Length: 305
Image (tube, rainbow, N blue to C red; front, side, top):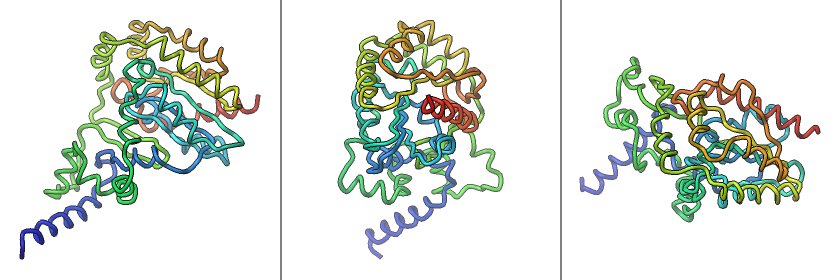
C-alpha cells in the first residue's frame, strides 16, 4: 500500500473519530462563525456586542418571549460597537415589519481597538470554496482548528475512558448554537479570574468618546428608519463592574444619556449582580438564559409602548 493511501486512510479514520467527540469538548468551530457571519437569512432582531453577548444572550429564549420573531446573536470576541459590526447588524434585518437591534454595551465594546472588529473581519474575509466547506462540513474544523482543545486531541488519538470523565473535564468548555449563542462554562470555576486581565486592558486603553459618538450616529439613523434600538449593560460581577467603572472615562450614566438621546431605549437589568459568572466576566448557560428572558420581556414591553 502506497504512502498516499496510508495517509488518506489515516485522515479518513481521524475524520470519522472527530465526529464522535462530545459536543461540549469540541473547540469552537470556524463554521460556527462563518455561518452566522454569512447567513443569507434575515431576522427581526439582531444582537451585537462582545464575548459577553455571544456567550450571554440566547436568541432561542427571546423568540419564546416574542413568538413569530427570528433572532440572531451577532456577538464576537472583543467586538466594538462601531463600523463593520453595526452595518452587519442592520444588513441582517428583514426589510419590513418588526426590526430591532439590541446593543450589549460593555466598556470594552467602546475601546478604540475594539472598533477595528478584528474577530468579525476574520470571517467576513472567508468566502469561496473554503467558506462552503466550513459551512457544509463543520466537523472538519476539528482537524484544522489552529488551537485544538487538549481533550479533543486525547479523544481523537487515544480514545480516553469516558466512563470516568472527571479527569478530562477541567478547563473552559463551550457549545455553539445555530442562533449565534455559545453556552459556556469553566471547571473549576474561577469567579475573579478575568479581573487581572481587564485591569491590564484598562491600564493601556479606555472607552472612547469618539467610538460612542460613532455608535450614536448609527442609533440616530436606525431610529429615523423605524428600527427599534434597545441598549443594556451585560452583567458580569460586582467586582468586575467596580473595576470597569473606576478605570473608565465614560460613566454608564453618560453612555445611557447619549444613546437614549439619539433614540435608543435603555433596558435596566434588575438584580444584575445576581447572574452567575464562571470567570468574573461571562455568564453560565443558566444565567444567560435567565438574562435572555429579561431582555425578551423588555423588548416586548418596548414594542407595546
